[in-house]
Amino acid sequence: MKSIGKIKSYYPDFKKDEYLAELIGVVLGDGNIGKFPRTERLIIASNSNNQGFINRYSDIIQKIFLKEPKRMRFKDSNCTRISIYEKFISKRLGIPLGKRAEIDFKIPKWILQNNQFLISFLRGLYEAEGSFCVHLPTSTYKMFFSNKNDSLLNNVYQGIKILGFNPHRSKYKIQLSKKEEVYTFKNLINFRNYNKL
Image (cartoon, rainbow, N blue to C red; front, side, top):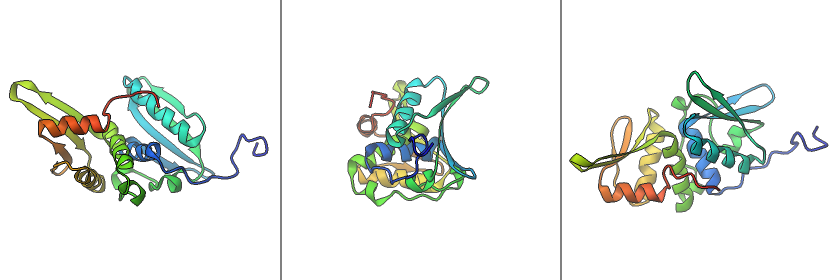
């Protein structure tokens, strides 16, 4: 199988670009990397109604791994899982194996040093764990990132500050509350905009 190209014999580092940065973000938010005896498995979970999300991150995985991921829909829970098996996923993404709640993660330097990569990284995190809220009667505008992992909250807070915004941090949330900042940030990361790659 290796000789005919069905199974890889070499697993190079992924290309450091905006797609890899976004994938790292979404995996940290809604993903899991599991270890098996001869391989690893990456899973990203989505609401089955969010076809745009499912299509986008299936396409990004295919672009990075050069093979098509599987999509598994679970009707009872309205959940779709995007999954791919391959060796050294954790090492090449730079994301530890195991439960997301226990991951201690710092934004890689290659992402921090390039604003476009940082924007893509934050997009992945917000697509997984973010929300946009408007309440017109009270003129309230909010852009939230919610998570119980302290290191991810630190990453989001740091990243937003680097991009020139003024976030507020609470125990499990990062939020922007000024109307102009909310819309500027939403448009900057293309939040919930699932155009073709």
